Length: 342
Image (cartoon, rainbow, N blue to C red; front, side, top):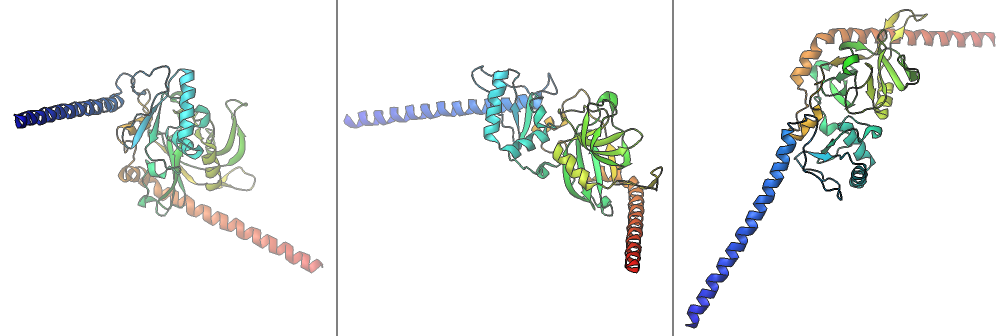
């Protein structure tokens, strides 16, 4: 009798253990379904193509980053208190260089950091941005071109190539829809550390480098609000504007400055922005390669211009060498005269 009672006790214990385990599995399954639904809502993004759908957030707590693979969505609320709380979390979670990189990926500067309802944030931060480059790391078509700068309208980004190797890329804000930046091949002209806008005299343009003299188009530092907003110029972050200011070559003018003797660094602007649609970098939440430009696409676009770029490059080198030789000869003549007089 005691054995029967003991057996029944063991059977009941096993039954309740199995029941408890099943409940826990159901709970885990429900949690997984909720996480999957959250990711699907980010991906669908149907009602507003430039926003991320998130679950309502309680007023007492700031929104939480939604993990979605290689890139995550950091939702920014409209409520000021919640936004301030989010800023505190953002600043605590990421250091200054990491925050700079995150904003750059969203085509924003620190002044405009909350000019968006969602930040796209990499799961792993590379402060050089090179890990997230949408441009090919190598372009053989440019192997003989020493310096080349290219701006992409579709993804609002620029890239710099030296002999076909990508050396730098970053965000930009190009001409708005009513004042779009000229497309095609151009050459860097003159530069000025602080230029004054011809549209409004109160607009100061640090590290301005002109690329279309007659249309007054150039790159320089100015606000990056997260979309094309300029009056046809190519806006850059301050660090990028300084770097490009020192990198690119200017034109060389004939004596008197009336005509051009040699052109500067080749610059190309291409493509079109998806006006009124979802910001291209938001697509990284669904596909980390969504903004990538293929080697084939870049080659097809650049190839017809390579001959001209190399011609202008060779001409500039000859002119620069000629001027250098003339200056050296002049300096030697002056030195010889001084020796003779003494």
